[in-house]
Image (cartoon, rainbow, N blue to C red; front, side):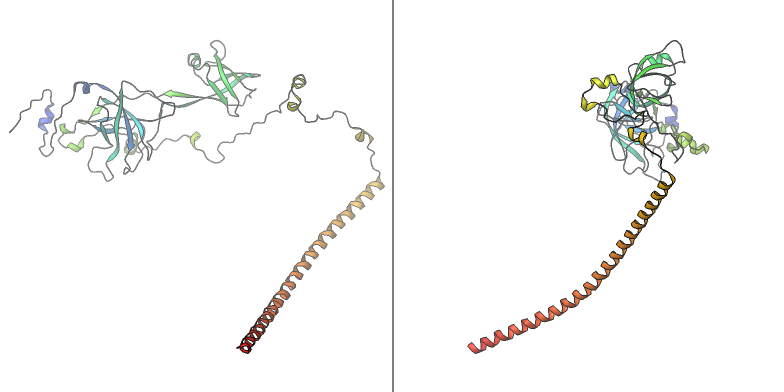
Length: 392
């Protein structure tokens, strides 16, 4: 029996380039599967795939009845529940992959490949996964470190520049925690809208910072998810393996013979960065505050004397004869020390020689004592046997 199926809106290339060697599988889609949105996958690189998968490199996904190309964004879930972006997939661990495509029921299996061609020398399947969540958008963040320099320092207050571009951007970070390279913590108090350079902020610190300090602020920046959906239309071509989708950055560089760009600042060579160690002034507590502190917390270090002591004032300079006598005494003491060193060395050699000779005498004595014990044992054994024969 045969079934006739009429499909409307089918491209003419499908009929012109029809090849009966390639079977066609017909499937049905639910009404809610025609909508587009973001899909969150529990993703893992296949253990037989020889390379790690890079973030935002296009992949071909086979989900349900569809095959399409999309750009995945890899992330991992923190303890706080946030999705933190990853540059590459983990080698032996699952991660999250967010793609844009048609809505598919959860718990649906997913297979991803990098190329549609079947003439690959390596293993074809790049990764596998399962759909865990569907939503119109997912918030994925990445680490962002903002750096700035102090423009003016007033005790524990400082004005930071070059951290923000505009005053509106600086106003969003009011109350954010900041830190210097030397470890002094602080907080952004207010963004200055008038006077000074654009993006200037006022901040307070635990201690007075230096003009040479670098101030940085750790934040989380939201990653924009690409909305790319390219269905695989290989059935419309005469040669089914000629279909090619979006190429990765590595393939484009390989085709155009372009080198990988490298920043000189990112080359951490020995001796490339020479940073002077900061020197801080010693802590000085005012006397008025020290009087209020308990005795255990007060500074016990003696203060440097401004006036000379009585012994220093009474010191009498030596004349020429006294200097000569002291010099002679120092020479005699030096000779005495040298004589003691020679005597100790001679004693060590004499003791070592005596121990060596004593060890030889002890060895000879031990052999003689052994022979003597043997003779006594034989003598005692012979007398005991004679007694036993008499009694019998």
